[in-house]
Every structure is written in structure tokens, then in C-alpha cells.
Picture 1 (spheres, rainbow, N blue to C red):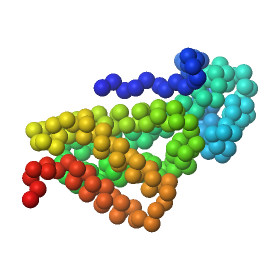
Picture 2: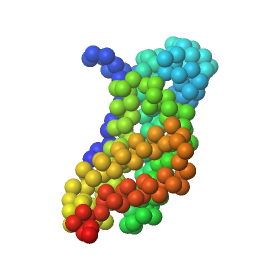
Picture 3: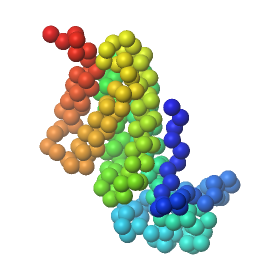
Length: 219
């Protein structure tokens, strides 16, 4: 499955994307400054108060310079969310790729731990993404993160459990596992329930292994 393209947001038939792709080093540096400043403004002021003028001021550039690359605040937020999703999926994908030939609790725990770590490192931005962004933008974030990890999980399941009834449709199993783990991990980070991290990891491992086990082999 090919990775999804960069998300675009708007209303009606209006597509909101970066105005131009930075090619020169100076242009790339400007875009990086805009995104870094936008991320800081988003965390400081929240989505409702987020504006291009505030981002331009934080980046030390004029609004006109900002508009050369991003037509509005939605395009900036889209780029910030896409980059954040890439950061999380890169870390989970790396943990999974490192253990692609392994089978068992250790591999499952390592991947769940990588997901928790990635979410914990940017808990403030995670809260904004899940609790403040409009549903359309949040849906794009989920697609960016989940598709990549699902592909890797499906590949692992196909290689590790080919022929068993529980993994005859690796893509389906991967979809269920990724969404279950992601939502449990996100709620643990955001809600801070009285559940120790190690205990949560133990339960996530049990959840995954129980789901992956062949029901016909149980007594």
C-alpha cells in the first residue's frame, strides 16, 4: 500500500495546501522556521487562537512572507500535524522493523513501548491534536499514522503466522490491533489513569497475544 499524500483541508472544493515547495536552502529554512514557530504557537495558544499573524510574529517574518508558503492557518496546522504523525510512526515502525523476525511477547511489548514513548514525548501536542483539532484534520492525522504502521504489522503477521486461522487476513488483524493499541495508549497518556506504565504494557501484550492466538487451539 502506498503511503498517503500530504493532507489538505478546506471547505467545499477549496483545497488548502502549501503554496510552493521550498527548493533552495533559504526557502527550506524559512519553512522550517514557520513550522517550528507554528508548533510553539499551537501549544501556547491552542487551535482556536492560532493565527497566521501570530505564527509570523513568532517566526520573525512578515505575514506576506508566510503566505508565500502557506495560504492560511489550516495549511500550517496540516503540515505540523503531518510532521508530528510522521515522528510517531517513524518510531513505532523502527521498533517493529528491528524485531520483524521475532515472534512472541517481547516483540509485542517492544512495539507497544515504542508507541507509548513516542506519545509521551509530545503529550501536549497530542492533546491539541486529539481534543482541539476539527474532526477532519484529526482524521487525516490518523490516516497518516495508522496506514504506515498497519502495513508493517500486516507484513509481520503474514510472515510470522501464515496459515493459522487467526491471521488469514493480516490486513484486517493489523487494522484491529493498531487501532486498539493506539487508542488505549493515547487515552493512557492524556487521561493519566492510576495504572503504572509497566502494568499497562503487560495488559497490552496480553490483549495482543490473546487476540492473535488461534481460538481452535484453546481448551
